[in-house]
Amino acid sequence: MSTLVIDTRPARVSDAGLIAEAHDEAWRYAYRGIIPGRELERMILRRGMQWWESAINRGSRILVLAAGDDIAGYASYGKNRASMLPVKGEIYELYIRPHYQGIGLGRKLFMACRGDLSARGMAGLSVWALSDNEPACEFYRAIGGAAAARGSESFGSVTLEKLAFTWP
Image (cartoon, rainbow, N blue to C red; front, side):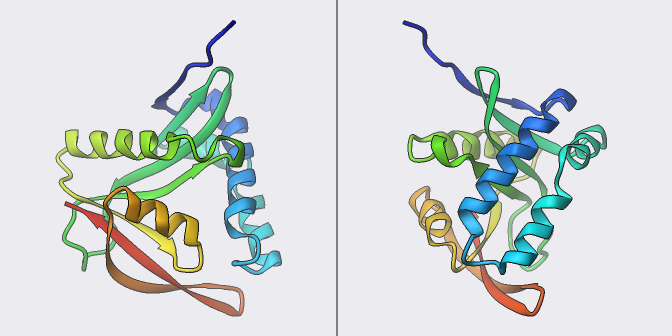
């Protein structure tokens, strides 16, 4: 019997194709029925393998959840972009492939990002989630996030509310 080891590590250029696949699966799962179909498809298509290769080559902070030879999920993070929030760090994206969800991997990836941000002197962090994405909002609340701000984002002709969750 073999054991599948799942660990976090910085993304490599060779991961770009699998990150693109994880992005595609996770976004369709999270946003189908929330973001209008045409806009969702456009957003997913923009994030193909070349986009991820470029992001990694530019030095974007991207962690992956490596599950053997697969990528179970990914997160991108860095400096907080919302000056009204009293935190230094931000997780820009955190997504887990649907078949890896519900077993603690999101928390594992979140904590890895949080630890790296803290090690880089970025105390506190924020994450934005669409209000209609109830599973994401529940996840962030369950790991101690406090709703700290509201905003909106437009997807074609539809404007959706988003929430900022923060951690000290």
